[in-house]
Length: 286
Image (tube, rainbow, N blue to C red; front, side):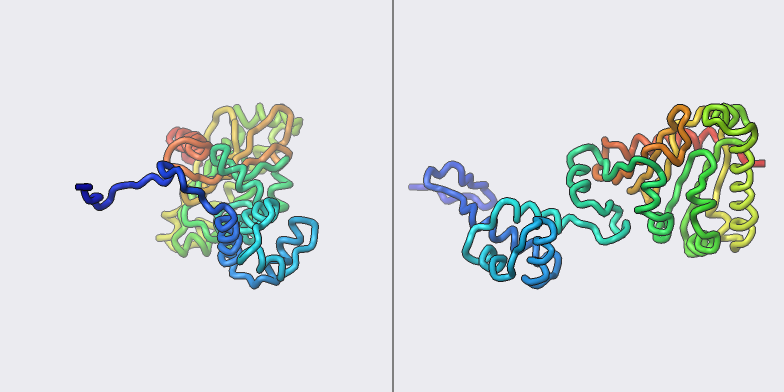
């Protein structure tokens, strides 16, 4: 007598010689699911597909591909890109470019690469990065993103609302900032003066103007070591990192956008560790 199949036993369909997956039906379901995920009508989704494919997709064709016909391969790829496409800004921590998101899924946790800080800031503003952040950690040279590009009033507000901030500056008038001034071709003391001003802004215009409770959520210090990266870490998930290159200003250096996608491995833990090591060796700003 045939023994009854035990509950929970996995049955392999590949063991059945007669089994053939209905790939056309799977493709139709994938296309319908993509449209449903975006909450769009057939006409709206067809218009989006048309812009990505550079040829016209009619609502009637789309409905046919979802019900009876087999969708073309380029339509399926375009639909997948549309689903992955982020809304403007960084509301979910991803870059705007959908193809970059897919590449980032495959290559560590790199989510975007920009030729310079200027290019990055033209596409992603300081407000988009910091407005909704609950935990901000930054290390670099003068931290202009925080002290020059972001509103002081808004910074005070998010700290009052519970955001914590750790900021680490290259020590003004120290040995390594002087080396950086020479390397970038600045007059002696130029970067030191800028960094000292930013430290004053953070202390006098932010820390001293928030409640005592909020002030405890702001910590900052300096370090006098060779500068390798400018790093911004947000909520344990998002990182903006720039290398400091020989004879190249920081604003002209390539910028990496990193999104943590795994528990271990990838780029995010590397930059997290760099920040943590510098923070542990910091000096308090006098």
